[in-house]
Length: 349
Image 1: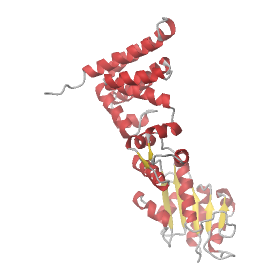
Image 2: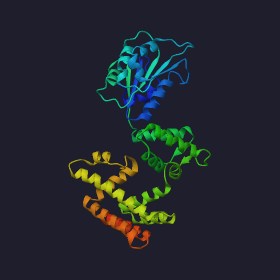
Image 3: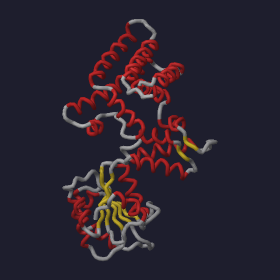
Image 4: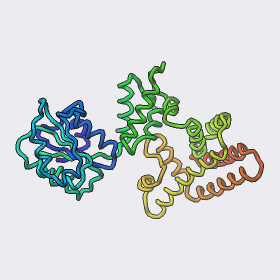
């Protein structure tokens, strides 16, 4: 049977008693490991218990395909239900899994940790089609998944997360559940002993990011927004804290490059959604994503081409003219911001 996304949490807490084996697969190795361990603990909390937990490598089953069924039918010497963990499990485990389906009585739970199994995989197909087996997919977390993880961890430790901090944290997570858990755990450890019970953007940045990079991000955002007031303040903060003007110019270039790449893809018959998915470094979701989309709408590809030329000229000026780097970077940002502001729709009075 296939485990649908809406069924995952309930299944992990209490797997169907009819299920003999679960194939956990996908392209998120951290999530595969986490969910496989959670399934195993639903049977035996102590995964180091030698009497109730058996570990088998998938390649062992290739030479001994009957072993899985034998282990399933065996009784625990000390009592209690047993769990059999097969990791890693690939196509070599398919025959052993078929033997498990055809085995006699037994009450163990078999958990197989597969990799990124394709729809043609015999191991995955068997788990999806047999009534006594289950297939549990594990793919990168969505924005909602990540928000639940962060807020759930915060609640467990007695904290709340401010909205802007949550959006910033989520933007930097995802791709691998193991890494995500590690980053969240570091943040919770940092908050131990804090006077405030609200996790702020400053708290998150102290653990998960470079504050100077954050401030440069603020400059880049305000520049392409055309927000002159916010830009002026952000530039003051960056330079007051010793920010590198050349680094700032290059951050402008990276952002313009990303916008240009996405728009070029769309101009060649693609669409913005697929282009944003393929482009490296493009924000996935949240307020940063919405801001990026606004920049796509307000900066046509021709203007971006001109902007990239001016950025390269500014970096060359920083290195060759002897003018103060801060003046060159500030002048460039303000010029772009004024250009963006002049093209914003004017509000009617």
